[in-house]
Image 1 (cartoon, rainbow, N blue to C red):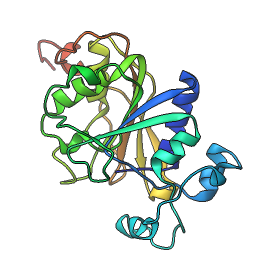
Image 2 (image 1 turned 180 degrees about the vertical axis):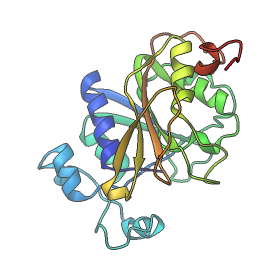
Image 3 (image 1 turned 120 degrees about the vertical axis):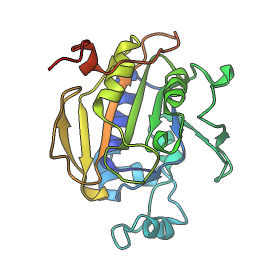
Length: 242
């Protein structure tokens, strides 16, 4: 999983809208695939002096098939802290030693509920089989008024268990009494030069570029547990007639 300049700009804008200090939870540790020039443009001219760069930048770039595209990569927690955002990470294992270890397929422990201003799912949910419970957990992590940012695959075949459509997020959040805080966008193209295409929330569409990820942002409005939604097209046509 990773954060590119488009996603970073969204998270930073959400943090600015919420105000500082801000507490962020990332599902998994996202590599910061943002060039130094992009960092300066998004975070200010002095950002490169205020952050830590990863010692394994070369191997991370090679892992993402970005050899030669950048020299060094910002360490994710360091960058967010430089921007006034305290960052925690959860994962199934503590691969870097500082993650909170938990299985998102299982109900969330009450001690972790309502602690975060922003929850970022940048490519974790598709790897969890119990996606409905993951959505409940993601919602529970956030405080009331908190914001959830999803970037999950739309057509990455066999990348994970699932690909996701806009109606998945729209129907889950709105039928549970929360609010979609953004339009839906398909992100596509090179990771360092990502493009976006606006998508409808619940109606059919065609022509999404290959290997697109879906960007969606929601706001949590209450602490009641969410039920299971009915897809919008069946709510508008409950008798299933042509």
